[in-house]
Length: 64
Image (cartoon, helix red, strand yellow):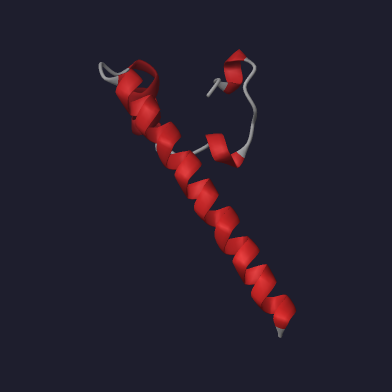
C-alpha cells in the first residue's frame, strides 16, 4: 500500500478512521511500522467484507 502523501490512492480499501492520538502514533510512534501494517490489513479486510455484503444484499433484493 502506498500512502496518499506519496501518490497512493484515496480509496476506502486503504483508509481507516483514527482519532488524533492514534493518528499521531501511526505517523510518529515508536511502533509505527507495525501499527501501519495492522491498520492497512484491517482496512483491506473491512472493505472486502463491505463489498461482499453489499453485493449479496443487492442480489437478494433483485430476487424478490
